[in-house]
Length: 219
Length: 219
Image: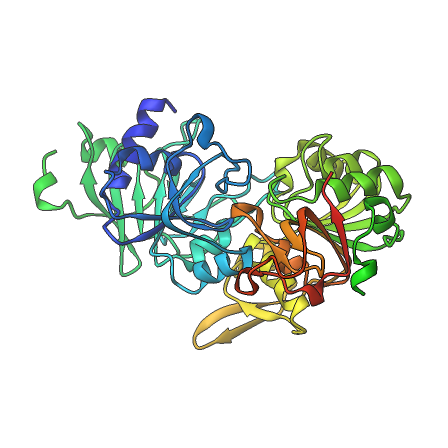
């Protein structure tokens, strides 16, 4: 996956976020989203290791060894930020106080099942906050390429990797398209760039309805 | 117990016995009580330990040092993956790993400190991390029973303590520390700075002193 592809996915996903929403960003593509948010976007970022009001990456003397995000990378805190312990942070998550979780995935099924933490036969020793976030956030946006590094579809009929949660995804953004789950069914709602319905069909292993939003028909 | 509260790191870790369960604060190395961990490594012979910590340190740093000594029998953690040597030790059968979603991990420690018998959470339902756990439907939603986590000894880090053992944390170095301080038979707090009684604003105290048995100045 090239950096350009990742950036395009992040750019489109950023447009799913609305002023006033509290958003938790996962590791990988989601972490590129702040670069596509305007300074006045009104989006409030939460990191599960204990901060609401995450600011940009620090420069020079802003670097603080006590201030990191869930990827363990240095961050800053914005005016109005709040710190809290991990139990409080996950109570926010499970309690439905986080509007959106954006995260990467290995597979998403046509029923919205998400697999994003373990590859069978490899190390299945790190889950972090993925399960809590996918279950607890009001809206779950998955950002991922449409195929794996081996060229296999990542939107599938049924997940073959261990599940993070069942029926949890609301939106999928790939480099080709936006999919939405409506009443538990998967819909292709938008084509990105020069992609055609046939392009998407060729790399999608799931059943879905084509329900392109007006302005994007023929895009 | 005020007079005996402040002791050396070497004295403090002498309370850890072989076979004990030891909780260790920190998210990665941020907020980890490194002076106490180093004392445990260098001045204690306790082995066969169960470590409750979000991560098992980093290679050769923090709990990663204790791991290299072969003194950890079992780890209870949400993310072993941040120390590849811990992953290798699990895969080689040298340590037993219990993987817990991060929010469940935090809440189980909170429950342990709060005298609760556990809690039902929707997190991990339908995944392999719920295998063998009691499941119950509550208001139409599937939940799993998670039992509390307690320890013989908790090692925590606070940026500032007063001589009574009241603790104040700084930024994202708070994480699991205030929870763990409540959930062990003996809590040892390492403090970056120890101030006189009365110098901490009572409203800014996050861990009230009744939880803290011993206080050690950070090296």
